[in-house]
Structures are given as C-alpha cells and as structure tokens.
Amino acid sequence: MSQPHPPNIRSISIHARASKVRVAQCVPPPTALPGFLAQLPPVLAASGLREIVDGVVAAHRNGRPVLVSMGAHPIKCGLAPTLVDLARRGVVTAFATNGATLIHDSELALFGHTSEDVEQGLRDGTFGMAEETAAFLNEAIAAGAKQNLGLGEAVGRALLAARAPHADCSLSAGCAALGIPLTVHVAVGTDVIHMHPSADGAAIGETSLRDFRRLVALVGELTGGALLNLGSAVILPEVLLKAFAILRNRGQDLAGCLSVDLDMIRSYRTTTQLVDRVRLLGGRGIALTGHHEIMVPLLAGLILAELEPPHTPDAPAGKLVTRDTLPALGERLRAAGRRVVFTNGCFDLLHVGHTRYLRQARALGDVLVVALNTDRGVSRLKGPARPLIPETERAELLAELTCVDYVTLFDEPLPNDTILALRPHVHVKGGDYTADTLPETPVVRSYGGEVRILPLTPDRSTTRLAEALSASAE
Image (cartoon, rainbow, N blue to C red; front, side):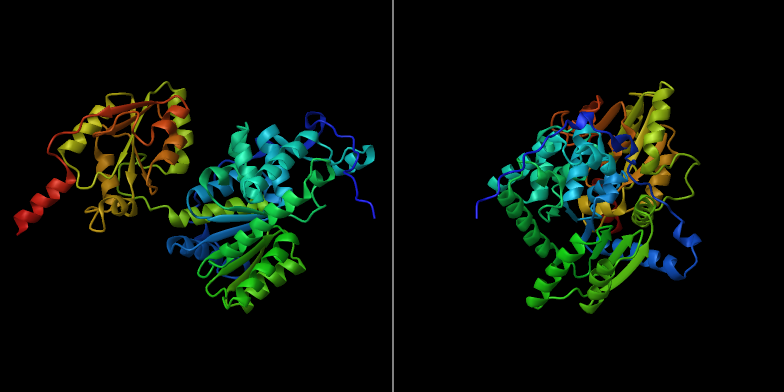
C-alpha cells in the first residue's frame, strides 16, 4: 500500500479571516472577594463551592500542588490572565490541556483574535486553513521535538522567542515565562493544524507523549493537593484516567486529593473519571456546574480573599489599600498630575532610621506608597523569630506617619507584582544596592519608571534595637 501524501490544501491568511474572539475581551487579573462566601447559605452547591475554596487554599498553604486541567473554552472566554495570575501567585502549580487550547491561545497572543466561524468556513472551504497559525505551531512543535521538549513548553518558548505582542493574554507564554509546567495532550486529527502539510506526526506524537509522562509524574504528587478540571469533557478525563491507572499499578493512590469538575453541563466522562474514580482512589470528588466566564473569576477571587492578609480597621481611613485597587489608584494619581513614589520593606519595630528614610522618599514626589512585607514574608527574610510586631500593627503605625500616603501588604519575596500594579514614577530603595543591582530595576524600567537609592541612617536597624532590648532585659 502506497504511503499517503500530505494533503493538497488552499490556505488563507489569518488576517483575512473573521474571528469571534478578540484580545480586548481578556479579563484583567482577579481581585479578592472578601466576605462573599459568608453571604451564601451553607447548603447544596454553595457548600461545594466553599469546600473547593477551602481545599485549594489548604493545598497552597501546605505546599501541595494544584493542577488545572482544561479545554480551550476558558481561553476563548478571555480567562488566560486569571489563570496565569494564579500561577504567578503560586496557587496553581501546573496545567494540562489539549491541542485546541494551544491554537486559540497562540492566535490570541500572536494576532489578537481567534475562534473562526466554523459553519461559514465549511461552506467556503476555509475552515482551519489559516496559514500563519499552522506554520507557527507546527514549526514550534518540530523544533521542540529536536530539543527534547514537551509540546506545551515548546509552544510557550516559541511565543516568548517571537515576542508575541499579546503574550500577557497567553497561558502558554505565561507558563513558559514562569517555568510552570503546561502539558498538552493531542489526539492526531482533532486539531486544525493537523490538516496542513507542515504537520509532523512524529514530532506531535513525541512531544505529546513526553507531556503525558510528565503529567503522570505531576499526578503522582497530588496527595493532599487539588485537581481542577475546567471544561475538558473527553481528552483530559481520558488522559487523567490513564495517569491514575499508572499510579495504581505502582501502588499509589490519591489520598487527600480534592478533584473538582467545573463545567456548564455534566458529562459522563468528567463525572466518572474525575469525581467517582478519584473517590475510589481515596480522594474527594466534587462536581460544580456553572459557566467558566463567571465561575473561574469568582473562584479565583474567593481563593485570593482567603490567601490575602487581613487589613486592620484601626488605621487612618483610606490609607490602607489592597493590591487589587492599586491599578486604579495609580491611574487616578497620574491623571491628577501627581508624582508617585513607591518603596517597600518590613518596617518591624519602627525607629528613627525608618522615619528619616520615608521622609526622604516622600520628598522625591507628591505621593508615597509603602508596600509592607506580611508576617510570613518577614519570617522568610529574617527568620522564625521575626517579625516582632504583627503586620496589622506595622501597617497601622506606618499609616499614622504624615509622610506616608498609602500602605499595602505583599506576601511575595519581591514586590514586582505590586510595582506593576501601581506603576509608580519612582521606586526607592535604601542600603548598599545600586540601581543596576537592585532586583526590581528591570520591572521598574520596563514601563519607564525611575529607580533611586537612598542612604540608610548609620547604626539604626530593627536588629540592633532588638538586640539592645534583649541585652537590657538580661
């Protein structure tokens, strides 16, 4: 039997193709929704929603993985920034998806639009024939095979290398930039790029198989973690079933794992594989029905509300702000012609060195915003004996200073996400840094901001003060 030849097709330019989804529809990163859960009755689906939030939060706090499996629909709903933000915060630790996700995600990142009219395309013979999409993805997959990469990582790297103009709305690019696993599981013939002569079956199979083996390893770590399935009704449930089978073959189970199927309709495979069979293997399974464009931002906001530290009500009104309000605050101040100055630190056991530094920083502009390390962040930096003063009281003390206009809390090792949210004119740091050695400098300069280094007051520090107090107590 003769070997089949690549199909002889008539391709079109994606720039001439009508699309139903545009990059402008992508949502901004999620905001915390404190108090929302408390307003829901503790019955039926509301109880399930509360259990999901608690399970994901517990997994994150306990250092356990949270794996999101998904189809392409969340991408077409503009939810990639929400998902990437959860990964950036360390809440979601890995993603698994299908080939359709890569197509829509890459088209949004590269061209700003996706999702063609299938009926019209079938009538005129142009369905799936976008030349640029197939060329980019098939080339990225072939290159990834040669570099021993998985399919997801290969495409994510290719988008970064291409400097995709809308990479901020891309799950693939976001995962590649963060170093977060994104595994892609392809059924050959199901994706439009397979119709093009540039498709390399060996490369598709090799990279997708590599991703399957990586997924098996990720699923093997789900004890005490969480698995969230967003809308994949066939491919991912079947792929995950095979991963479960390998685990059982090795004598492992899913004890303590929370598995959630979140989709707009219930289907056999998702309920059976991701709810019932997870329970069979020792985990918890929950099915929650709802539209992704509503439920995913809602779930993200509820999770963030549990993870973001509380703010004290005793500080001066209006001075304490949450990070989700910083973009609007920055825009409002810039529109009013105010020069915004930003600094960050622990400010544990406030002393004269702190106040002198803050007054100098405030003198560099019109408004000073201080980002304060949370208690957990201070402990990471200073050790388990610190902080001496809890975050709510440190925030209140800073807010009482006339030179400080706003105070916000951040939990990450670096304040980069807070800086990007506010986009201050000037970022101020004290100590032995230079503008070129400060870790935050690339972020500040990426939007045209300025970095200033201020000298610290000699022999004035919280550590010295704490040591002196300890010595006097002895």
